[in-house]
Structure formats: C-alpha cells, structure tokens
View (cartoon, rainbow, N blue to C red):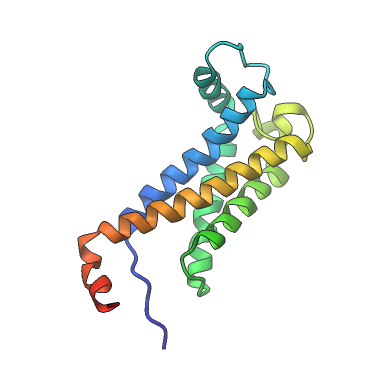
Length: 160
C-alpha cells in the first residue's frame, strides 16, 4: 500500500509560476549576455535580458507553461514521486517539445524564431539549461512550501 504524497494547489501553483519564470528569463539572460539577439544593446545586461524575454512570443511562453504543468500532473497520476530528477526531466522535455513543435510564425524571439534554425545546438543548449533550472526551481519551491504548509503538519508528524 502506497502512502499518498501531500499536495497543495497553492504550493503547486506558486512553484509552477516561478519555474516558468526561470524557463523564460534564465535563457533570455544567457542570450542577452552572449549577444545572440538583435535586441541586445550592450548596455545594461538585466534590461537586455528583459527585452529579450519580452520579445519571446506569448505562444512559446504559454506552451511551455502548459506542457510543464500537464507533464507534472500526468507523471504524478502515473505514480511518479516528487523529486528533482523527474521535474528536471519534465522541464527539459517540455522545452524540447516547444522548440520542436511550435510553428515558426508563433516562435518570435524563441528557437527558430530567434535565429532561423529549429535545433541550433548553441541556443537549444541554452533552452535546455533553462528547462533544467525550471525543474530544480519547481522541486525546491514546492517542497519548501509543502514543508511550511500548516495543513500538512500532520503528514510530517506521522513520518517520525
């Protein structure tokens, strides 16, 4: 008999939003730092990163967010336990699917819409790093939130 993992929609949502922001802004920061976007002004790196992130199409951002959350839910329904490794895998798979499947006309500032190449090794690596970091952020923030959550205090006390 398996014991149900504690869950909280509040913790899931908070971790999901910050994981999404990581998947968007970390690659944008790297792209700005490496001057891979025509938007980079070589002035303020953080402003350049925000400009690069702002140029990424809403379709790319939303597709990642939807895929990441759906894959986390499916994995958990399938019996996967919470953990950094599964969430990192989900982050990388989600970002790879967006790069692979999003049509060019919806990819403004992202993947093929950034440089005209769907799987450019350099930018794909940058996006994969964003997916990895997104999974780590999701795992750590959800775990921290669940540990602080008063409704799960009984779950924690029964573990001892």
